[in-house]
Length: 149
Figure 1 (cartoon, rainbow, N blue to C red):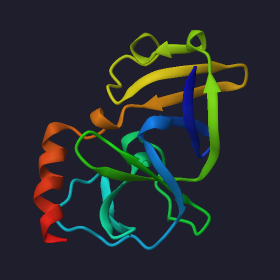
Figure 2 (figure 1 turned 45 degrees about the vertical axis):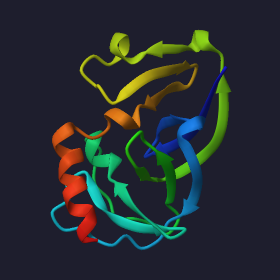
Figure 3 (figure 1 turned 60 degrees about the horizontal axis):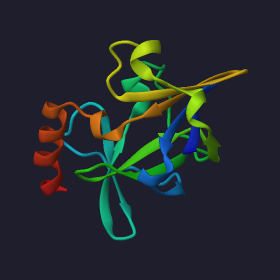
């Protein structure tokens, strides 16, 4: 069984594996981070830790929009760092059998940061691989920008 934290951007559903998600929080003010990659909106303080906030709308080429008070932060862990993703809404934890999860390459070739797709009667859920979300260059740029924060 695949346990996923499902969230939305506009009307599209996205997910992270439950094992990578620490918690979901209300939106807070994001502090800009000079010299960070474009995909990084800034940083937030999460329980005493400085966590970069990723603009996943930019990564998926969705229209930009102002952060709303109703937005939520999905705080997750990559193999290198904690990360916060801004979501319009979090639908919660869902479990899907292995047979409904399709490898992303067969549905979305060339999208290396999506590891799988759940096919549902009413649409698709794109499962992120946060370890591949930043390019090597973006990761190194973020590493250089974070100590200054």
